[in-house]
Amino acid sequence: MKRIAFKIHSNSDKTRHIYVDEANSTELMAYIKQDVRHEKKFRYIVELILTNQKFPTLYDKEDFCEDAKGVTAMKLFKGQENDRIYCKEIRRDNKNFIVVAAELSLKKKTQKLKQKDQNLILKVASYEYEFKD
Image (tube, rainbow, N blue to C red; front, side, top):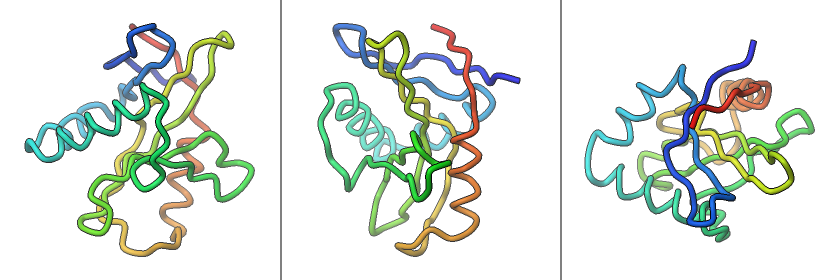
């Protein structure tokens, strides 16, 4: 069964989009809006994605194996709380690039991926989406 994702941001030429997984949207949006610091950092990372800027310390691939391809992480407060929003990148119609914020992971403690993190990344990789604008 496909999951539903709804659009929250797009770039000016409507080729790059940020969506949120509907099933996890309450948790994700509550995390983002819990204070100004979280909201500013999230907006900054979204702007990097929408303008196609590379900044691996804030947003990077999490493909530790072939099955995890297309999964990325928004790295919020790296070196502090080290929270992550795991995302799935999707190309649609050869012109649209979509990033779906799918799962929240709080307080990543090590540089290595623990089994719990690997399982979450593989879960995000398996998601298929229907998009709502």
